Amino acid sequence: MSHPPKYWAVVPAAGIGRRMGAEVPKQYLPLGRQSVLEYTLDALYGEPRIQAVCVVHGADDPYWSSLQYTAPRPLIEAPGGAERSDSVLNGILNLLTQADPDDWVLVHDAARPCLRREDLAKLIDTLSDDDVGGLLAVPTRDTMKEVDEQGRVVATLDRSVIWHALTPQMFRLRALHDALAKARDAGRAVTDEASAIEAAGLRPKLVEGHADNLKITRPEDLALAGFYLQQQERL
Ligand SMILES: Nc1ccn([C@@H]2O[C@H](COP(=O)(O)OP(=O)(O)OP(=O)(O)O)[C@@H](O)[C@H]2O)c(=O)n1
Ligand SMILES: C[C@](O)(CO)[C@H](O)COP(=O)(O)O
Image 1: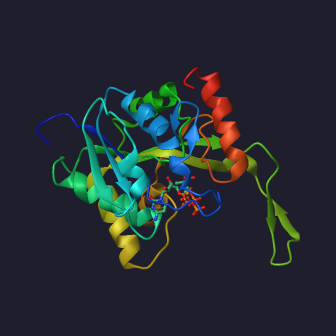
Image 2: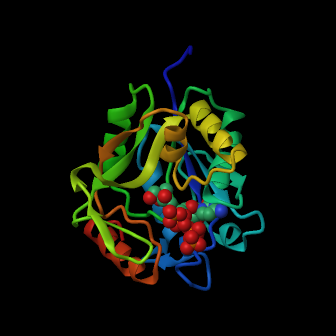
């Protein structure tokens, strides 16, 4: 590669928020002075090394077009897919038309507006010379149980080796493209980017973040996200 790698972001924002059960997809719900998605975009643009963000939204999504978001640097759009991984792949395909395949891409859920500036910087600092890439994660706090089909405990797991996978997840554009395309072609469901990279035989690195980088999933998460943003003085 002839230049130092650049950093791009993909924000999958094409979900319908079924578990949230709101009238609009959760990424468009108001949270303080703007929508969830706008807080998420602010967090990414707050990192100066990210040179552009690709927002992946539903093709006929009326909510996206009604947002008045003013991006401080380039904002690219791509169409959503049936599953989160399809949406991410669409974003990556768009970026590959203008980026170097060895550039880094950080994939971050639209529904995680409370990403801390220092966690994002730490992720990039830790992984910029890494051969594989990795993701923000937090260690589990509770005792972890494995259960059978009847919901009866079969084992207590060693929690020191179990972490919650968060986003952003940061990989080289071409490597992530190939891993996601391979999973799709094999009909293998992957709920995050790291799973696709793992299935390709590689071992993503975990970078410890903070649990307040929650994914708004159910109604009670919205108030919690508002509290965390207030703590960060971003609300
Ligand atoms: N086909 C999809 C599905 C999800 N997402 C995005 O992926 C992120 C994480 O997914 P999740 O929390 O599961 O969101 P939803 O799919 O919207 O929620 P649910 O599963 O409850 O419907 C969200 O930002 C969501 O908008 C996406 O871009 N395309
Ligand atoms: C990518 C992710 O946010 C990591 O925790 C997660 O896998 C996607 O969310 P889902 O609720 O499992 O679809």
